[in-house]
Length: 136
Image 1 (cartoon, rainbow, N blue to C red):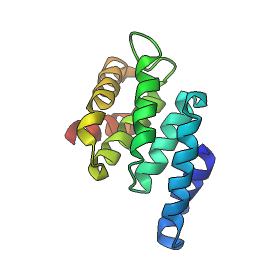
Image 2 (cartoon, helix red, strand yellow):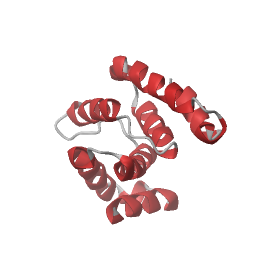
Image 3 (cartoon, one colour):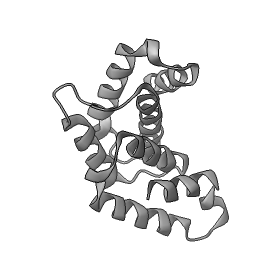
């Protein structure tokens, strides 16, 4: 599912195919039913893809938020610097089109805090992603 929605985003499917939105909705619904199987990389890539598609799959975002924030008391267990930076960028973009951006604040805040604590691990692009999220 991650690869499918990623390919749709890279191919700019929403610009090319009339029913791309229906397909991405179907992917979001299917992903929501199996979200516990998603690795940190899959969460980052999936959210990135929906952000590139300018879509906010609300139920899926909330499920990913719950999973990522509940893995341990520190949150985001298993996320490396690239996955944190990709996810924080995606969440900032999704917040721009979301009707429920305020409810996603906890996840974005946790991502930003984790990113700031691990800043030395970030690439220049990762720092730019973190900066973008802080500016929104």
